[in-house]
Length: 262
Image 1 (cartoon, rainbow, N blue to C red):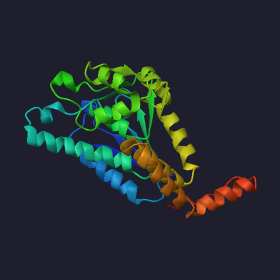
Image 2 (tube, rainbow, N blue to C red):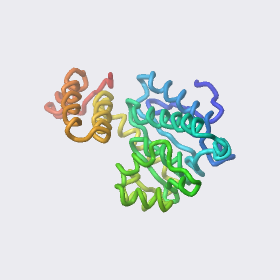
Image 3 (cartoon, rainbow, N blue to C red):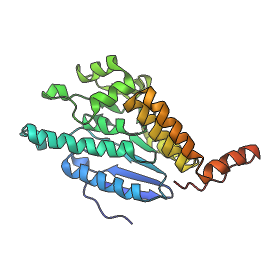
Image 4 (cartoon, rainbow, N blue to C red):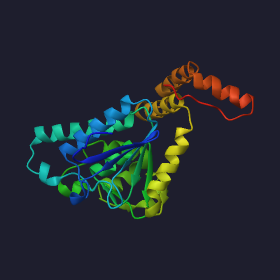
C-alpha cells in the first residue's frame, strides 16, 4: 500500500504501476503540489526493482488541461524561473526513469500537460484527446521543455503552427504527425496502454533500460556522440544474465526465461 497523495493516485498491479493525476475539479491543472506528488511517486517507482513499466494518466475526462494560471499570474521573473525549473525537473525525471513510461491520454493535454506527455516514452491517445501549447495566447511561451521536445517529435513546421499559431490537434492528427504512438477509441485508451505495458514487461529489464537511454542520448546529443554511447551500452548488455538466456533460448528454439535483473 502506498500513502494517500493529495493530487495523484499511485497503484501497482504486478509489475505495472499507474499514476493517475487526480484534480478533476480543475481538469487536472498543474500546480506545485501536483508536481511534488508526481516526483515523490516517481522516486518510489525508481527504487522498486520489481516495477517494470509505468502508466501515467489523468483518467477519462482530462489528461492535464494546462497549468494553474491563478497560481502564476502575478509571478515575477524570479518566481517564473522557479516554476519552470520545477516543471523541468518533473519532466526530466519522467524521461530519465530507467523503465518505459506510457502516457494514456483522454481529453485535453494542453500546455504543461502536453509537455508531460511528450516526456513519456509512449503516448496512447483517444480520438477525442486534444494536444496543444497555447501559451503564446497568454503572453508567454512553453516553459517546461515543450518547444524542444515538440520539434524533435513533429519537426519545426508543425511545432511553429502549434506553438506560435496556437493550433490544437486531436488524437488522429496527433498520430499522423508523429506526436503520439497510437490513436484508439477513447474507451480503449487504458486497455491499449495496459496491453503495451504487458508486452514491454516480456522484454529483459536491462535491455529496455539501455535502449531507452541510448535513444534519449541520441535526441539530446546528436548521432555522432550517440553512436559511441550506444556502443558502450550494447557492450554492457553482455554483462547481464538475460543476454545469455536470450541468445541461448534463440539458438535452442525455445521461449526465453528472463530474470529482469538490472
